[in-house]
Image (cartoon, rainbow, N blue to C red; front, side):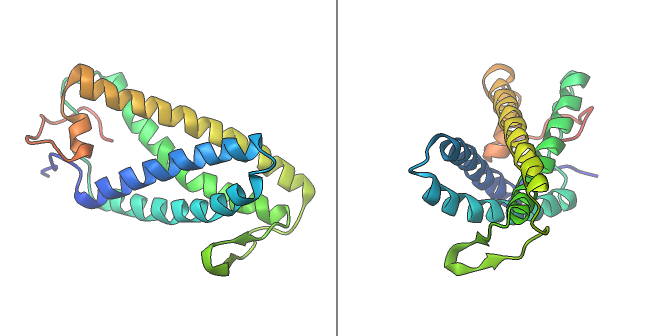
Length: 187
């Protein structure tokens, strides 16, 4: 089956939109922990943004499963192709898990999740302080893992753009003109 030379417009739009949203969420999360005075409005922003990321992550995963990505360069070392595959699926898992863990955490803490326009999400769990504490820690560690994974992803993207210059970055930027040879791995 022929594989595209670059990601389609929907994939690129979802990628770059979610990249900005996730970076914003990471910084909002740090600011929520660091500032007592700014915490209320940051929480009011964090919750609906998390819900939006969850919806976009579901859409993105469905789109990804229905549209094969462009191949990686044939000369890419096997370990790098495997790392690319593993890191992409880890990113998908975290994009889905982080909002769900946050939602479950707030439910266990008996905190309502109010979205824009006063819409409130139903609780996922019954109130339970012990479960809330466990999920709060899990959400924090998940955020650290997400941050580290995003940094690795960004580093790999810049490596492909500036060092290898092999079209991998261009395939998501929408500037790739030619298809590379068939890959050893899949993203």
